[in-house]
Length: 400
Ligand code: ADP
Ligand code: MG
Image (tube, rainbow, N blue to C red; front, side, top):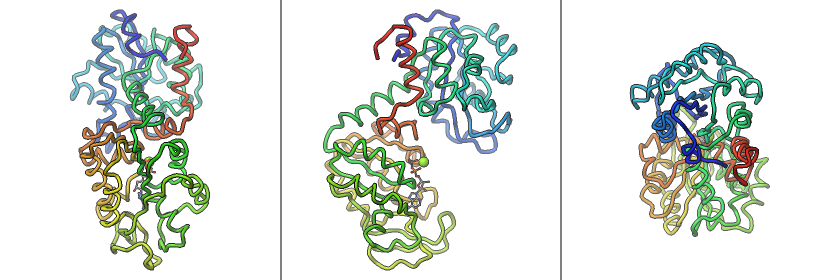
């Protein structure tokens, strides 16, 4: 794979670069509520601007089914300009045609044009080559810094990289370096904390990391599923019984999983009117679910994690979005923030939880990848990364 450093050596002022970024930021009433993804692409953006490149930047935003201006990328351009001082213009025409060409022709060296939402055209998701061609037609180089989109075989991440000489940006490089370390050579003792809602999603990661694991902490739906499988009453808690045998098999032969011993149970996920503490093994009224782990569990988990050198955390310990169930996730996050070992956080909701607590900068790494980082850790081939590697093989510029 060629990196942005390789591009810098051949870039001349005025060269046009197509930059696929992941600026899929949360929007409420047209306002950006978390600029983390915008900040993540700044190193690549600023490096290209410093070289005098004319950047045609593109992202998807939300899940519009068609051209729908509620999902316009215009607010992103405004924030890049006002908060980060990036010389940028937003172009409304999409897919790009004459107006985009004219805008590129008149753009100053060292400036950005932001295209409309890639998903305004259904051909983005079908990896349509003609659509990709239309996106990059007026550019000389292609840069992908959208790590969080690399697991999707979409036109701007996959087909587009096969049309121009393609390079990875700084964010992709950083994610690859850290996630490869975690996957292939973590400093031991190595622990995983697996929680969240989607049990099956965590299984691929556990399968891949399993042989190197010195310990696993299970919370959330994974813990509930395992406890229910042992005949422990979990009331109406979220479980995935059809995944139970596979999970048990995965964990067998490895270290004994650390399971919660007490819970915060409630009658409703979002607006509880009844919230009680329950010890594992006690009878649970059938209208209650375990939505968080309790204090005893937290003490136990923290003491077990004390000596870990590397910790990968994926999946919140409870329903952190609801204040009544947020304690477990907050306690684990704060404990990990001051832990001496190397802590890496993966998964979209886990990353959102630590950002909400405003402690993201206290970890070795908080992956921007969500599903992409999990698929990478599972050892799967990500179409976006594959396309970058193929591009340089095609140009005979590298062997990787
Ligand atoms: P990530 O995005 O970090 O990989 P998931 O998507 O698997 O994590 O799960 C995140 C969601 O899990 C959060 O929205 C949280 O509310 C939910 N969750 C955590 N614990 C529980 C629980 N005990 N019961 C139901 N939902 C839970
Ligand atoms: Mg999630």
